[in-house]
Length: 582
Image 1 (cartoon, rainbow, N blue to C red):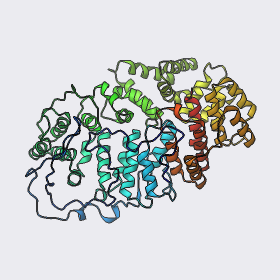
Image 2 (image 1 turned 30 degrees about the vertical axis):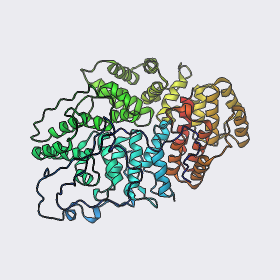
Image 3 (image 1 turned 120 degrees about the vertical axis):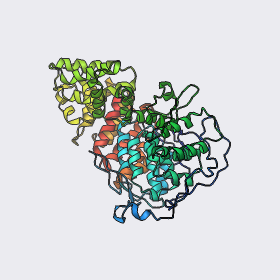
């Protein structure tokens, strides 16, 4: 029922993705209590002592030691909850999510009548990254939208599961927005843990402060004790912060980098007066704790440590306004290939670099070439600048990133059969969704060419594609590209049923095969449940690249998205499949 254990079209799933937090407070508990945590206590009460457990390894933060009398004396009991928010301003757990500027939200019932237990299992087992940039974009928009809480799951837990997936995808800002739409007095254990992760991913330890005391009372781990200490420091209470820090770091080395980073955050508050030097020597792994606190305090993370963390950390880096534009540029290009960064975002980032008179290095050169691609008075000069940016890329992923980077500049090139690289210009435009300008090139490309194939998929018209044209492309392209084109055209309904079957046999694409996943996504498409289609599409494409995505999976994803009213996304995913397949 939960699609667990079913052979998926792409690589397999795992129950718990690799965590970036040190053991002890890294991942949400697999079976969290669905009951909301108690409301914030009326008075400050010291959390109960916890016996420190043996550290699992040298990366552990560990548990909270007995805090004794570290906290200030409790004031007279006052029910502060009545002064926090009036009833009309409170957020209901019946619908949780956030609106993204410039993007229409998914319908509140985007997951239809799906059981919350099924959705929770699918979300928890989804293994990012997702091969497709456009499938990632549609999933982010679905998970971020204000959604009705399904049956058999607590609304705060549903928000936490969605935010946890977004964090694993690298969507730190979207995850934080979903978490923030739940009032803190409705937090569950799961949401406390995900909220800490979201604060780290956005490089904002101050995000812990509204929940640090309640989180520490429920989750007796050293990370929460350190959060309490940091928040006291940020509040300008260095004496109390020092006591809490001393209690939290008991049993650990004086040179423990996790403690030192927390102390550095603590010292940034008013009257902090703490000078802490961070040395990365001996640190063998980058965790979310280390990245988040280092970023918050302006400590540069050694480049080699990024290789020890998942790709989502590079995407957090790309999104962080605390890091200089030139230091984010490479990460931003990688993030763009996974849908985390847009063409406009990349252009703006390189615009900042270009405006910096002191900028130098390769990023400054890229910024100058990009400016030329937009502003050169001669069309040939602009095309040459665009080609230069493409040719600098040496891997399939960076090559696709450069197509995204140049998409808008490519859309400004007038359609002409005299241009030497029409296919790549069309691919560049479509990588960022500029299908209108791309369709102007229909008369400038040859039938059966790569440009023709991309425009055949991009065309919003429903007129069928000639089988002879498909055969012409199949004869010139690689077998796998031909398979992807066939799957895309068939899924979009651009081939007649007889031509689709004929082409499937010729290209060896078994579009008629079925398993639990194909049945589930086909049914979601027929029901018109766009959120469920987006989630199941991601389940079928959880892979590091397109090499692991089968044409059969592409067919079902495209067909289901079209059936669920997401024809634009369906076309972009089909185009991406042909573009990124060797």
